Amino acid sequence: MSARIAALVVALAALATLPFWLADIYYINVSSQILLYAIFALGLDVLVGYAGLVSLGHAGLLGIVAYATGFMLMEGLGHPLAIVIALAIGLAGTAVFAALSLRATGIGFIMITLAIGEILWGLAYRWISFTGGDNGIGLKTRPAPFGYSMSSPYTFYYTTLIIFLLSVIAMAIFVRSPFGAALRGTRDQPRRMNALGYHVWAIRFWACMFSGLLTAVAGILFVYYTQFISPQTVALTSSAEVLLMVIAGGPATLLGPIVGAALVVVVKSVVSGFIERWNFLLGAIFVAIVILMPEGLVPGSARLWRLAWRKAGAQRAKTEGKP
Amino acid sequence: MNFWLVLAVNSVTFGGLLFLLSAGFSLIFGLMRIPNLTHGSLFMLGAYFGAAFAGGMLGIMFNFWLATLMAAALMAALGALAERFLLRQLPGQQLAQVLVTLGISFMVADFCLMVWGGDPVNVATPAGLGGFIRVGQAAFPLYRLAIIVIAMVFAVALWYLLDRTRLGAMIRAGVDDPDMARVVGIRVSRLFTIVFALGAGLAAFAGIIGAPILSVYPGLDQDMLPLALVVVILGGTGSLLGSFVGSIIIGFIYNFGLALLPELAYFVLFLPMLLVLIVRPQGLFGRQVP
Image 1 (cartoon, chains in turn green, orange):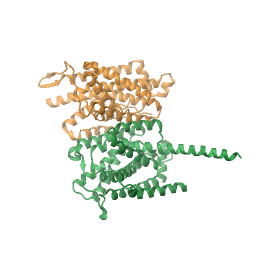
Image 2 (tube, rainbow over the protein chains, first blue to last red):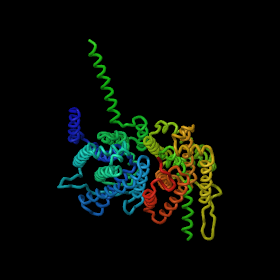
Image 3 (cartoon, rainbow over the protein chains, first blue to last red):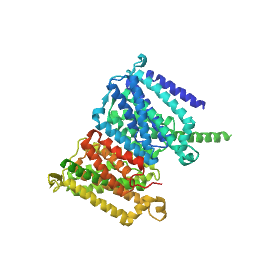
Image 4 (cartoon, helix red, strand yellow):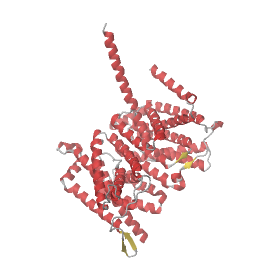
């Protein structure tokens, strides 16, 4: 247990001092991107990992919030008001999204979320008077609460880091809470949970809302980070990217989606420097991970690690046994 | 009046294409219990291959119909291979299978972009069907009417295949209760391959005969897949009648939406889906999947 705490302290220290040992602004921006995508991936993990509901429409939810923020800022609203309203719109959108998709579970849920996501993409792409179509919406400024301007990569990184840590803490509390346990119950044994008197649908609905909240937070960070939003953000590829983060890292773990986000963002930024064909690689990684390491990298490597540890232990016991 | 009539004919034409696309989608879903997310890609890839065969990729400028059949056969073979060597690796893991089809769809989209570039490929209307039929003052393009006829023929043929043949009976048994079908000696996993190949071939066929109207462009897969999804959500999975009726409804809504509310055409599609999900989540002609 203490090793775990030590690892946590080291990770926190590394994250806090990151701008001091990463000289290049490019890497600091990549780090901000990893953190904000990690929040998004954690949000999706609530559904994919803990509720057993795979959503392929989450980029649509992120897009609603990002477009709402962009649109309100373009109309001249202040940052605090725009953020609050965008969060509210995001939650309202999630409620509709959940009410519709929870008509089904399993594969039906995937289909409905996919259809909703595609329809939101179609809206973003075609509803030109509102979304600007393919040209998207640009943001001129980032917020500066109490005179703390976020326009530099450093300040933006620290803001993202704080929101990221808050999200991880919220997620940790959520997972350990009775509600989290009930949610896992509805994932594994929905009928027994129902027989025990739990309202399975309501539990799933509130899990969707929590997921939507994290997604909305990520959406606001995203639109401030890129200062631009276009239909590409809402496309199925984006939903698939964040799903890949969760599945590659390991669903139903806290660390998994974070590792997955880091992996996908790093591979994407490194690879896009060399080739334009990110989508092909994304598809190939997807197929490879699903077939070869379906449990995800974090549980997968943890299993291998434990196996190696036990083997080493057995070896040690053997050698010590021999005089 | 003419405007509405022409729009209605166009809607039925588009509905016919959608039926060819979604019939396979619905069957694959009914039998294998997975939405095949490569279905839009099969449509697009089939259209590209058909255009390439007709345009002389193999050194000969094939006749349009011959090119269509070749592309459909090629895609059916590719579909069978993908089912046999990728999806079969994950027996019973539906989620994993869906994700594999998703991954493949990205690879196909990028492959098409790499090979055929970003510009739309136009396909000439096949010889003899370029004209119009005049009824009173309205003029209907012959080719669109031909598509309606082709779709009808396929609808009848598929109905015959599923309802009147031994293979169809086996497929229906597999859709209704795969375990019991296995018990009575039907090789359900072989049916998977057959149905996947059939669906892939139909999707590719729809892609190439739709090409003279829609043209072939990157992103065509992303345009068609949601339509197939909505048709199947609307009509119910595994039901041929469901995909037929759903296709015609969506064909009308989509075309009228495009003509009247171009900015919201995609959103209008949402409404029937919404209604069906609220009132009848299993779809108009679907049965409750146990």
